[in-house]
Image 1 (cartoon, rainbow, N blue to C red):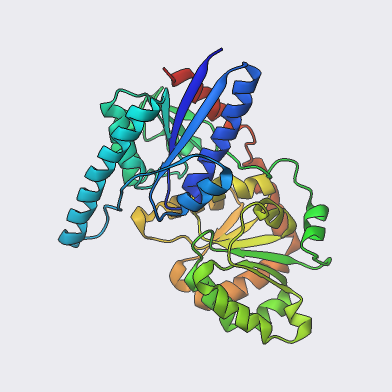
Image 2 (cartoon, helix red, strand yellow):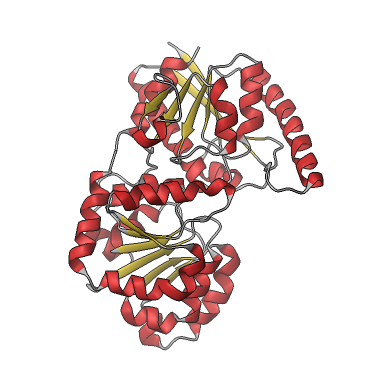
Length: 369
């Protein structure tokens, strides 16, 4: 019986963490089919979103020092370099103890020290590039990797032939066999339109402010599933409590959502969100049209994701600076246009790839020593 040990790492956002979980689930299924044993470690920062998400998923977790290498402040950059160097030492010790057959990295700055350590220890590396345009970490690690899994043909153009494998974006549990009527019943939605507003794990302040400033107008137009992030939850909860009962019943507010997120996407007619990596796979899986307000920071990678969905006719892109002035009117117009929504829904559905996790698992098992 073959034994396989896999070191996983990624962080900073759910879009870099959930794909690692999906790949791990697919690897477990493949190991069962082959009567093999498989063991995982997840390496992440002490205070990143990955630390909470990995514990929720039941993966053994190891802490690695790391900081983002962004900004122009020399002191901040020096601290980041020092943290990365410490992280490499942390990862070297982890790899020496765990002895992984392969290292699977999904991006975020914590992947940098783990990838460097894996290369120094001559461990094969498989990268997943969830975004269309690679971030600085994946650019750094790409020359060290045996294979790079990408979510779309457009992303493969950055690499020499044979290096990149187009797999799609791996879906976490719950995105298969979605049923819209059951999902709407789960959230007790009536037959009218329903809007999902989400800032993912950390929330989206500008979008939340836009909702708060015209909350009664929003709720007159649509039922609202609002995932606010933890920072804005309390003020929005107070706002909800002050609403008339008729409108309050149309506002479902959550600070964070994990296992129910596939149901929330299936239940709604339109989404408003940023354009992190997860929109590349999860919105198509749920056939959910979207208004995307990509952030311009961190190299502007969200803009490439949003543009891909817009080019396919599945999403509308709005500048972050225009959210306050334009988001309400744009959303109301789309919710009132059933033909355009259906066209966007069909376009999202055509982008769906439900076997990405299996494809990635196959790449990992092929590369593993």
